[in-house]
Image (cartoon, rainbow, N blue to C red):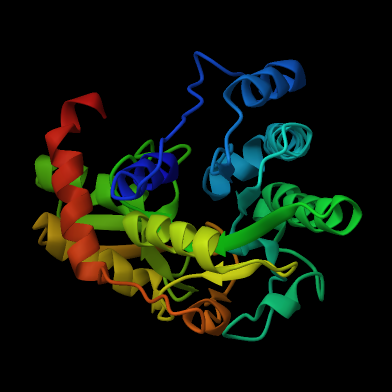
Length: 296
């Protein structure tokens, strides 16, 4: 999802875009990654590839989430150093922060408390990526930076209920409930936990902006600066889909981190701000989903 958005954004820039498809490069294979970078010699690298998923997927496959993300990240960052890449941006996640971090979460909250247990494996891998960028910057002088986005959504998202994040899962549930003529829609948890959502093309724009205008050891938060409860988001999704039904919560299921709103003042100080509202982003995302509903 993010990679596609970055390619869309870069189409407006004066540059040649190189992509590494899964049929070309296995990012878990160090030799393949090093060979690809040595052969193509990119000036810049945006590391958006990752193994991602929601609470259920993280809890079910902790070894996969930790191993695959650490390996992909290490191979790309080390290979970029070897190939003489001028600038690299590593894309992480807001789950790197402690479960009970002060809100909104500043970049310096990293490693100040315990992580959320339901996604600590993914979080540890992303923290390792931040530290790798810092280490190569300190030891070798590489201009490697990190950006930590909030919850992303948009065209190209994963709508599989067993492995998706919360917002695409809500879209899928609402769509299916409407198609079935259901009188209610159930969501995981209490519905009171709060989340921030950023449209993926806004994230891509922030990534390109940081590649142009930021160079520093600290990672940079990427978000919209506003959050809503999951119940509020679910109702917005139901409105977007056109579902008239009762929203039901399932408190037996985990909520995850109580609140996760990012402080984006470091990013906005560089001159960037988001453009797509949640209502507009939901409408665009659902239209994309409808155009491909048979696939799902």
